[in-house]
Image (cartoon, rainbow over all chains, first blue to last red; front, side, top):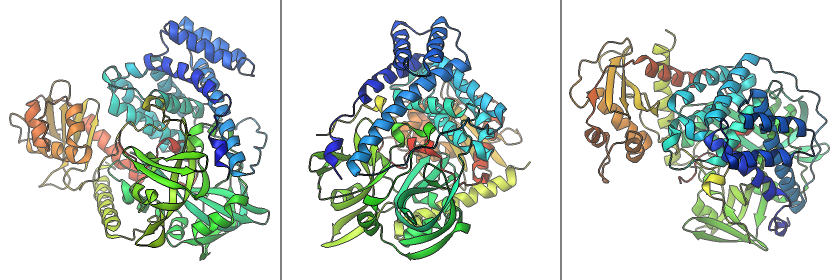
Length: 460
Length: 167
């Protein structure tokens, strides 16, 4: 891996972010009465896409916004422009990363028009709330406006095809609820909320959530590690793995997610996921799995079903990373997922020196110092920042949020003069140590109490 | 060298809300800071079918307590009732005393650690209001565990990393 390639800035990325920052700034005060600075930012957004097929619609949307007569359609055009810029930044960053890793990546098959997932009334309800937010601005949100999302979110979550939008809106609304009223917030997470809002507007367009046509794959699946995502009412485990196919090794992901409540956290979340994917137990046992005709999206996501998987032979992730990772081909990124936050490329790094500071841990490689993404390290497994600081090898996800960082999935570290491997997802199939087991038992108890309460109170 | 970390305002994965802390749910199955209130549900000690709905508003520190069938709580005194006290204690366990006090605009001492300290600081006064919206929030909360899991990817959850240091 040529880490030195990650040290030089990627052309155009900071310019794209400058334009996006202007638009995001306009959302702070809302789009109802943009001031001179916001009007300039909107013009800059239109100018940035003036050489693209979006030009006409975005220019019109900007004019209407400035004139104070903005509609859902105009918001969609503004969001398309913002998403196109960040999509381009994503593509440029990913291309640089692929070059550095020597990774080959397939191209996205040409898309037909999206087939509507139906439920247009639910999507319209979501768009209406998102419009109200944009008009009010983050400084204008109050408890009433935030709680207007509740009904739409509940209906979206109940519809499996719309779960992506439901889970996103629920996480977003939770942050707005905790922060309202906007007028007295000490600080506004400007980039983040514009991101969440814009992605929600995209997904709420009819056809955006159409399922991609799934293929099928067979072969030996060798897990590398687990990336865990969580907000108060959702948890997702995303397994990164190498699949040995007849056409050579390829990088795939396998996800499992479940709705939850905010008091279920840490290692307590695994039990919500375990029964839906035998892969989690295989990871704790460090086994491969043999897949037969497992459904897979063009983006490299397995749609896991235990019916297509059998436990395989023992497989150690560091052995997989050392032998298979460099040659594994990666899948292209689906068009609507292109955003720098989606960059999460598995890499093996060795031969670095570590340094622990007050504000973090860094890994220094020849030509590059990588900051460890502590905000993406969790307490649901045995991997800690201290172990990373004592490590000699690391399987991690390269990420980008203004600069490159590494999210460790596993490390080899010296513990009592022995090299041991410690995995962030080691407890997916069951906690091995006393503290983890205790947290699991407490979470199981919490689930039991809530199910008992639900049984008595919910169906009345 | 690597570029420096961007300010919080410019980060996509910036953490806005600290994760809740786990707690025992038997007595107080539901607590939240929402709609401008500390609000939640307290299980009755005597009747397994009954719960109390309690809330305390941030704006004027009035409190409400009634059963889920809208009968007034019999234990209301000046400064609160046992249900409100239990709610405040559990809120402190779940969110930490600083966040509860900040949300309620309660002027607590720097070394305050308990829900009682928060209640003492706000001097709550009783004003009956509707318990139904809080109870329906609780039912909605319970409904999450009834929804099915899925193995389809949710790419948007990359914006929501598990764990993490709090700003």
